[in-house]
Length: 110
Image (cartoon, rainbow, N blue to C red):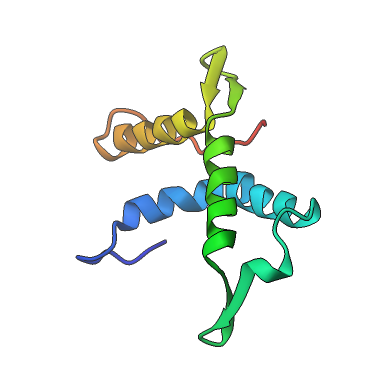
């Protein structure tokens, strides 16, 4: 997905693409729908709209809280945090890249 370069960790960016719709997008939608993030938490810049410092703090707090939530892993048969889930996905990619095991993409169950 991402072009390798000296300044970017493209594999990490590729891995993040897996989790954006199931973690980050859900957080963003919840913050807006519940009125936690409001119009005053944004600023216009560079022909776009960005979070201001207060908005970033709110989003980061929500993200950190979400990453500590546990979900029951269907194969491990135990609870793992969403943060651990990302690490487990990275391990699956490593095993694939070194030829140990064929990569099985994550299917969101949570």
